[in-house]
Image (tube, rainbow, N blue to C red; front, side):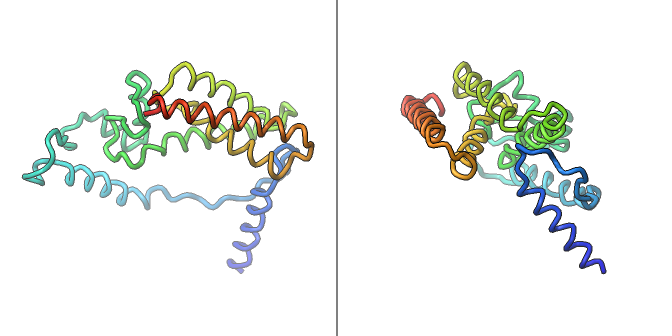
Length: 212
């Protein structure tokens, strides 16, 4: 009985994933299983302690110069890492790379804050699109214009905000519509030219060292 219910829930999720968000959303959302955050707390705590000990000079007599003792970090930094809000430090101290935030104890998780903001923003779009009777693609394109202006004015800097990398997501969304949704040949050609122009500009910036 439980297996049948899980299978039905899976199918409802699949139908939602393949829904065209330019159309009205389904009246009934699929039920999501509860998330047991407490079960992951011991693993998360062990992960942070492991990262702190393995990068601490107290645990390793030899190592590269300038190695930071993570256990000596301030309580605020630890609180930021436990709550995944390290990106708040970049608002006042932007980094030249998304993984260069000095407040992050485990730098390989630099993308989590962008993912959190992305999911929050997409959720707000899902709510606003049917209320305003506007396709989500216009939200994506509008934010893309803002993101491109942001990247143009502040090249090579990361503030920990979703707008830092929104243009990358928007280009992927545009490419999807170009390949799978849009049938008009003139519109496709305009999109092709815009994508080529973006690619040329990105190549120029990398060659000039702006994005490093």
